[in-house]
Image: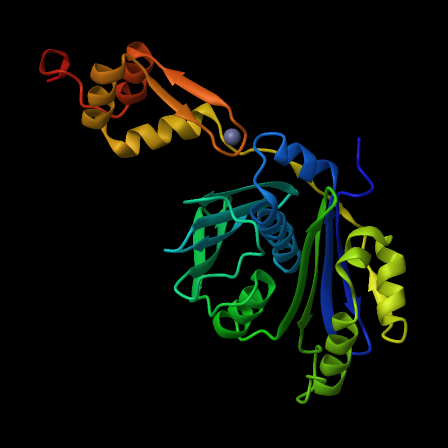
Length: 294
Ligand SMILES: [Zn+2]
């Protein structure tokens, strides 16, 4: 059953020549957290990253996965969130030391990446920029500015069991030379800045967009459902094992009797015994000499 609060809304602001997206997650966010809850500010940051990953799928056509990843050398080691083309989200964070109690300022040494894996064409695109401090929304704005030369305004929030985001991007109008409306862009940016996190997370999307941009000719497209779902599978675990190599697999078997892989996103456990491992490598290893055909 579709949840009315787990949706991605794409929209256009016709007058200003701006495209946008609004994301909200409630049930999906609860399901995601049921596999591991993080302390306050870290949970907030994960919610923002999950909302961002869904927002960024709004402007591309693809069949696969889009992930956002922040890697740092400070207490926040990793922040990762992913959304598939059909709206399945997941996300984790890794932290060292005492759990954070104050809002997390991003480490200026951290690096922020957005990766798009296209399943059909089997291609992978990754853009990466250094983080210059500030919050996650600012870091993503800077990403689009530097990596894609795409003026972008982003708002992200997590609170009271919901997470969400709102994004505006300046797009060139079709045809004509002077196709960018700078006044329009500045105008909608100021309007976005008047939104509160509470409005973002609680107002019905059409009400919120009309309240904010009522003079901007809002064109709202049909919404896309979002759910929490993990993309891990036994096949992927086997693929990972193959890439590690038989030597590594045999060493783990000798030490532990079986190979156990735990998925951090959904808590699923995959256990492979000696026979399973043999099967995994059978297809890719050369046949023993006696079996060689002449
Ligand atoms: Zn999983």
